Length: 326
Image (cartoon, rainbow, N blue to C red; front, top):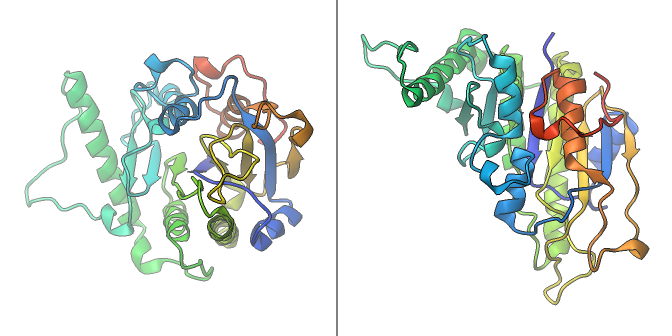
């Protein structure tokens, strides 16, 4: 039985409008890993995101393959089924984390993207060409066809179970689409989406509260939907952000780029509660919180204990955490 990882980068954590998340916490479906970061943190959005997405501090690796893509590559060796190993739901290009040499990722922003039009008599491309670039492009196209055919074979658009009501938000809509894909029998192992807006250099209080309300309610609706479909025990949700925020408020009633932050893990098979040391204001690194857990420890744990995938070399030396039950 396959297990699935749903990732949602770009989040923060505070005490505003957290009723839905608190319900998941009390129900044993939410784990909070505190003080997550990496040594000598970089506060550049671009470089820090590439570090998180490749699990590498090496700049030369930042335009190569992602941590999930590399793990999915190893699983795909000798087993090229044509199915997408990962699906990204969003408006932007496929995240670096999903880039792989052999594995493929499908990107879509709405359910209509799974309707592929072909001229009569037009066939799918052949995977037999020897050119590496042609192989890559062909694999991506074949994966897109496979995802579309799988989706429509189950007549999901007509038979979608709308028993769970999702909030009216962009994140909720993306998570609802992922739930529909899972209920369709999709064979992809990783599903990835994003929630932006947390770069709150100004007027943070209300903005942060609204974003956390959206995250909290969307996450609970997603897990409740999968629970009703008897699929939730096969799904783990993990959130991350490229860095945390500074403790001190700036002159614009916001906060600037920080270091350590929380990672959330949600689902019925997490080890619920708080993990790691709670950051303390008496032990700041300048104006920043000190991290106590390297994010690569979280990654190594998720790959081994949840997905059962071999870790890339960049993660091999990191210890695993007691945050999920495999």
